Image (tube, rainbow, N blue to C red; front, side, top):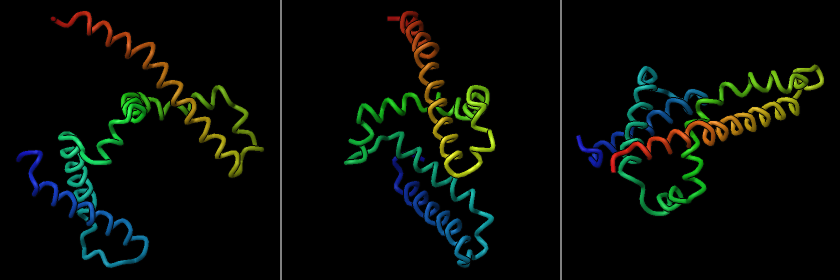
Length: 146
């Protein structure tokens, strides 16, 4: 099946709507017509459609938004963010041990922890990019046949 196949896009859209119906409907008590067992299948098919569409490229205003250099930079660093987001709370616990004091067991304390996690995750991501990924890409570029 071609990635540009209209049936794939329609199927993905219908599955996305089915997934939304099941998830939202569950919280509101809507009937699910015994489709709850297909919830993750609907999500998988919808995401396959998204990946197929993304691999072909987006057009229009959304395509222009995605071509923005700042958005492209975030996309370039997103894998590092994915790698380090689970490590950030551990690092925060070691560096900012005082955040686990009784004074920070409230909403404001939780917000401060989340901000600390985000900052640490981004610092780790940028450090990985500048000190590991970029030098390795430079080596690969020098070794590539011309």
